[in-house]
Image (spheres, each protein chain N blue to C red):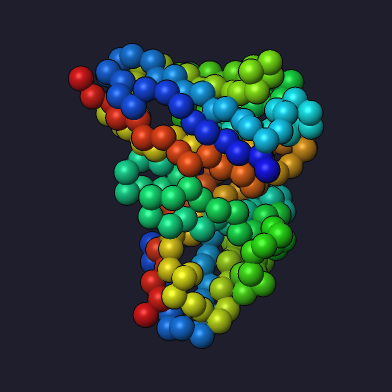
Length: 122
Length: 110
């Protein structure tokens, strides 16, 4: 059964770069043409899609974050990652990685990681 | 990209049916049959309940159903149960090949 697990620093200083990795277990990230995404949720607020990457590397980003976000994939390690630069307190959130159910593009998310809380503070 | 519009809260009594709306534009909800719905309990990751407007993943109760009319999608929960009390989020594919979420709806079972 496919499982996703986020990892990375729980505390990031303002103006620095937030870096998180999603490790995929129970299946190969490159064995099927799936899309993989990142979503975040500020405390007490709704979900915000950050971006998505195809298993061979094509990317899609939220236009409001596009200038600061980079999503990459490492099929040899069976993981994908997100980097968000120049962070502020507004980037404090629970960050989720998830798999898109579809093979055509950023469709519904059917498998989610448990989420990891990232706080931006000096 | 603007978030989809959902009511902040809805409520219902056990056994009743409730409907949560999700309003977008012709560039997202109205333009594609790629609306999905998620259930989220406090402190937990979201769970997919409906995809592609009206399809239920394996294991999701048939009390949950989805539909769409124009730029508004809807999630209906019939035979409301105490365990349905949670936050619900809609999401849609958009004309820019991106995804957008709704603001979320808190369901209270009275």
